[in-house]
Amino acid sequence: MSDEILGQVALGYSAFIDRNRAVTATRLTVFPLKPDLVLDAAQLLQAVGSVWPPEGGRVSLNVTSESLLQDLLRTTPSHNLMVEVPAFMAADPANTESIVALHAHGTTLMLKGRPLKELPREVLPCFKQAIIDLADDRRIGPAGTAPAGVTRSIPHVLSGIHSVADMEGAFERGAIAVLGWPIGDEISERPKGSREKSAPIDLQTVVELMSQVDREEPVEKLENTLKRDPSLGFKVLRYINSPAFGLSVEISSFSHAVMLLGYQRLKRWLALLLATASKEPNMKAAMFASVRRGLLMEELARHIGDQEMRNELFICGVFSLLDRLFQQPLAELLRTVPVPQRVHETLIDGTGPYAPYFRLVQAIEAESLYDFRECAEALMMDVREINRAELRALASAADLD
Picture: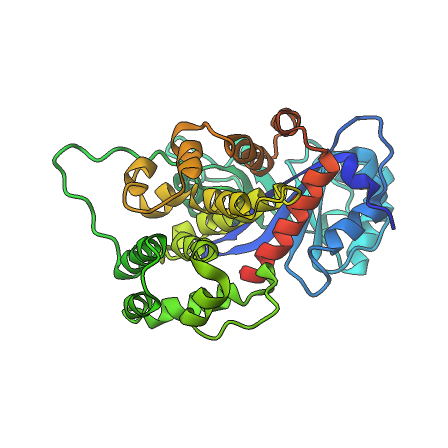
């Protein structure tokens, strides 16, 4: 079947985060590039199925085209796919038969938005959860708490989450999950003369390893550093041997990795290790985002023959949220972590050859069609290739979770 639809839509993604702060599903938002396009729901399901097969992770389809969504309601998606139905469509009796049939098929349906009129009696039981945007949440009282007398008949997920405070407030008011990226918190500079917080021992070990790899020190020294925390050695070997990186030979030790891959390629796995080393529960979503940013930036440059550039793009994406993960200004952190000059330019100054790729990744995360178009034009990239890169990156990321 053709993937023509990937040239007709823009794709964005965000994360479902439960009360344990674990990422439980991915939301895939589908924007038609032209309002009058006739889009094929079967092609969309095929494209999504290439990333999330029936036995794969859960994904929620947020389709912004009413005609494509109506077509989708008449299909039979695999059971790991959830479908979001806007409240106005759920309230329309013309859609009742399709909604009831899809529910009977076993598809998880999400009611998106607050109904302005009563839903048909047979429709409401079809929805497992409701998705309410933070801006429309009537449960926010004067003190940010749930006011008395405001109840919901089905569990709700709160969308539009941009900070840890948003997330924690949503859970306090009864949300079973949140939808978005709680990574927008401001990281302030430390007051002059204040002592720098010491990093946990495992983070110190990763930073030291990166410095040693950057200096291409003997393997014996690297292994001695790694022995301080055996769990890190296990984790880096798990990453290296994951299907996401497609090695044909299994790497059995750190010295084997250096011998087979070389110091430069090893940097990418250490970057990944650093960005996923936090044990703070509220940082799980930031780690989830970091991995996907790195893989997506690398995939966007797949057509470029420069392996060093692709490795640096990966590191750029993975390191872009270090300030959130470590709660320190990024400029301060990058003085202790060795990074390529072009990565530093992008993350600190917003300049350099990698900056357009980074802005495109941010537009995809923000599910902003306007910014998506603008960034695609700046890179002179075909929309189909961007969407293919995004789906490949999401598939690879699933292998690392």
